[in-house]
Image 1: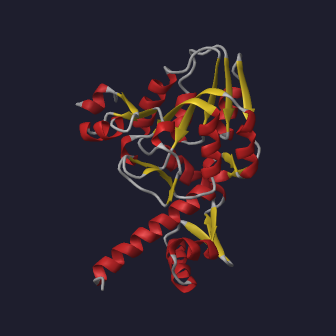
Image 2: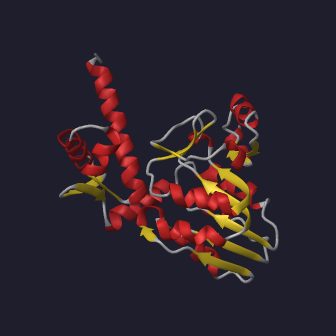
Length: 270
């Protein structure tokens, strides 16, 4: 039997995962939580009450949603600032792998957004994306053709998702995919706090000749709730920052994944 301290740690970890799920989709139902965690509705309602008390979510009958309006927008801006320098460095390095005339798929996320902000050297490009903010960012650039997938709009990630988004990629042939992930582990692969985007990400991978996973080093050797059922042979590159350890580089490259390390600014390296 677990001690009280172990039970408390489990509870805290569960609540963090619940919050990850809500941040990913914007909402979650108690029914979905019971199926995911295998716990009683009473326990999970208690978790949601505490998250509401802490100011993270708003409860409604049968579930909870992220704080809305200005509060929600503020949360997004705060999330954007997490590991900002690392993501910008990854974005600059990833952008060097994009060439004039490419057809590129951009997944949604803060790191892929950093890539979109670093491709001013490109004059001809076709972009397929689920990210509404990336479409807005690049849509006004001359020579860049944007294809935005359909599907259900997810405000927390400014993206489209669901079956329609996944089916959009059935006839897409792209040279490169820049794929975001919540967590990445050599042993357990890529994982996410929600399963709603899994089909979309698999469809993206199937459509691209070369797949680049972009993830800052804080996501390495971490595991989230839902695994991406994808073989390592489908992942060609991992672009990350200099926080990755030599042992982690070796582990990924032993799987056939080439690791590209983006250097941080000198002021961070001192």
